[in-house]
Image 1 (tube, rainbow, N blue to C red):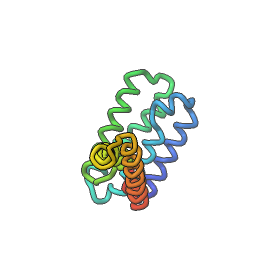
Image 2: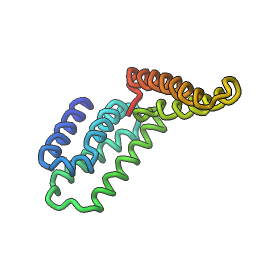
Image 3: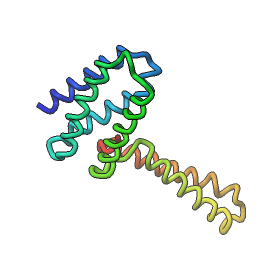
Length: 154
């Protein structure tokens, strides 16, 4: 049953996307909402809060469809706050990560280690920075791919 509700909600989201122009769709972050809906649907049977968020999203998307003619700046801010609130729950409680999370962390760690390597061992900081950044990027991309394969990305 949850799968059917997820499919219906995704169809409503597609209907909303077809009714609005591309600029408004980007401001409403409908692609990210679709990912959030999929994740909420998968966790709704185990997590009461996810189930409540899912019900809230069903009602909210229907309200958006009904009030397409007069979307205001306040609606965009409220929409973004709602998405951030739900995403925070998914990231913290269900140990999901955003895409590119490991890349950003390990690139900075690699760069800092590259600076140390360049100063202490090679006596040339210009060689250490790209070497460390390259190793950090490689590790970060590998961990991001692993998280995506396991379904842990939002």
